[in-house]
Length: 190
Ligand code: GRF
Image (cartoon, rainbow, N blue to C red; front, side, top):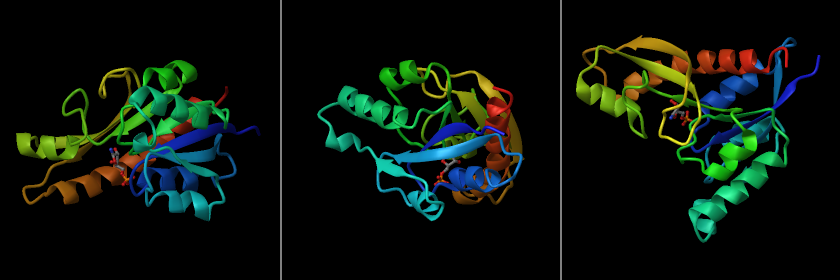
């Protein structure tokens, strides 16, 4: 079976990347992670090294402006000819060049139930608002901040004693299988 090439972008520990890599070991998996790109020396790059997958770091600070960084990131992604690009805890807004180049085949995972609590602090903001139910959303990426079409969501109950860290951990536990499921769905039968 042909597996469709997926490039994953990360900034952090790569918990979702690890889940995507684990799931890709299944015989009937529909995708293959062909490269992992980060905007910093992210700890999660280790998962890629361990799996023998090529990595690259494309730092914003290495370029004279955001457009130049966007072009470099686009070139790094396109070099691997992905059918799908997955932002898995990638903490930068991607630019128009990358969005145009991958034409709708780019998704993101966000640790809140969009359209509530977009942005970099979704877990903290939901907690501060006092919601009783939060969760995660897998969305298509567009030019806005977490405004793209929602592809899947999962709910997580907020507990009285929750901190940002404990709530985020429980959200990550449902976020990982949800993301794997969406990536499998989007790469099936292409
Ligand atoms: C995920 O919850 C994702 O939605 C978010 O960052 C988390 C992944 O971070 N924005 P990490 O790669 O596990 O550090």
